[in-house]
Image 1 (spheres, rainbow, N blue to C red):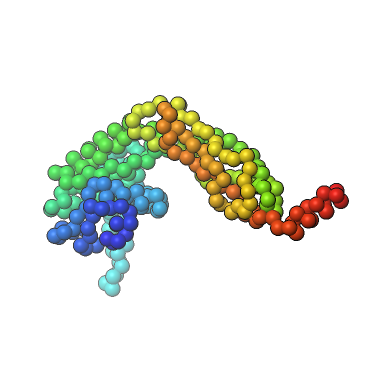
Image 2 (image 1 turned 30 degrees about the vertical axis):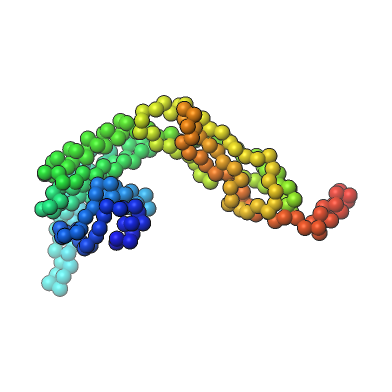
Length: 244
C-alpha cells in the first residue's frame, strides 16, 4: 500500500494497517486522499454506480440460515447535493469526521476532501461549499473542432506520403476566471519528413496559447511505419515510371 501510495504522489501518507483505524504513524492528508480518490474514479468510474446508491438490502447467509438487513449510504450528500456522485465517508476518534466528496456538473468532475470536522453535518456542509466554489470558479475548454490533417511527404522512403492523426483531443482547466474564448492554437508540422518514420511517433504538434502563454499541446502522430528506400526500390520506381 505504501509503495502504491508513493507511486501516486501521496507523499504525506504512511499506512500502518489496511483498516484505517487509529494507530501511531498511520497518517495521510487531504491532498493525498484527493489523489487516491482521483485514481479510483478515473481508472474505475463504475465505482459511482455503487457510491450513488442511497439504500439497499443485503442477504446475510450463515450456517444458521439467511437474514436480510438494510443499508443506508452514510454519504448524505447523495440526497442533499444535486451533483453528488460519491465517494467515501469515514470517522475515528482521532480523525474526527471526514469525507471525500465527488460531484459532476456538465463536463466537470470535482473532488472535495474534508478532514477532522467536529460532526457529520459540518463535513457535508463544508464539502458542499468547496464544490460550489469549484464549480463557480473553474472553467473547462475543449477543442471540438480538430482541423483535418494533410498527408505528409516522406523523402527517401518506400512510400512517398503518409497520413497523420492526433494523439487525442485537447482540454484545459482554468481556475483563474480567464476568458477562454481567447485561446489560440497553432499547428506545427514540417512540409516533409525523411524516412525511416515509425507508426505512433510524433510528426508535429498543435500548440495552444492563452494571453501569449502556452497552456498545452497535442501531438500529431504518424499512422504507419515507412522504411528507408534501398537501391532496389529506386530501380523499381524508375521501371514503373517508364511503363506507366
